[in-house]
Length: 300
Image 1 (cartoon, one colour):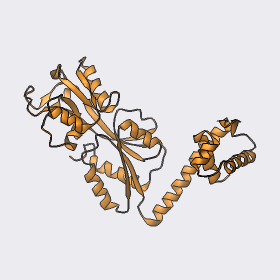
Image 2: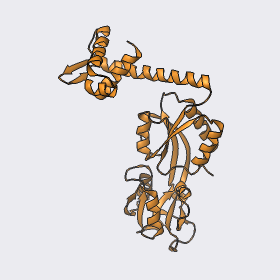
Image 3: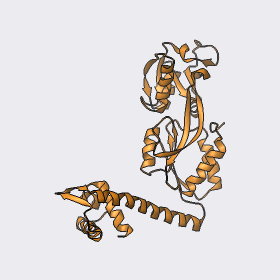
Image 4: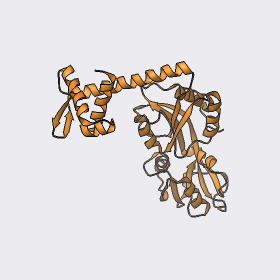
């Protein structure tokens, strides 16, 4: 078997039908079926059990699929590394950024570009849970996400944990001072950022629960610009991580820090797949993250 046949077999398993795999590979079905038959004859066993147009992958086929993934990955990594060694540090930095983003990211990328001018970029912005899936699918190599999430498939570098702020329209004078406790919020109508069940939303609700408080939740809003419009108009109040205020300046809102006694912080980290070699571009970016964050929020 050669690497080409292994790629064929990966497509067959992942697509579930020979015809779908052939379409994905931009080839006709008969040659692909012949390649599958040739692999089975070489190994002396069945890789799939056919039933009309559909099939089931045998245990032997599942084992081959696992190794085929590893071997094709190693081949791609070898080609990439040889090219990088031959041409210097280049390639593409493929990263994901949480929807709330990171206040100092633009400046950091600018500094990275000065050090590595040949690198190109693929930057995806989305909810942290979706970014985890993109890393699993290898659409991106790194993702800067907000915790907590299920992270067993990943290696995690914790960057910093930032405080939360209670925000109201600028005319509100109900809460004197620059700090409030969760108990101070009482029946305040809140619309929370993110989406129910995901990172930031979960952290806020969990903090209220720890103090046996029942907040007046009007709902959630994943569109941060709209949320800031709603708060500044007096429609509602909200609780947001510090970076969100830095990323959306100029709104007529009043921000008061949630008391440290609430232990309400938003951990931020960068994830990568375990046991997966990073490209040089991604490795260098992680090193820059380590040196610039040093346990503090980016942009500070």
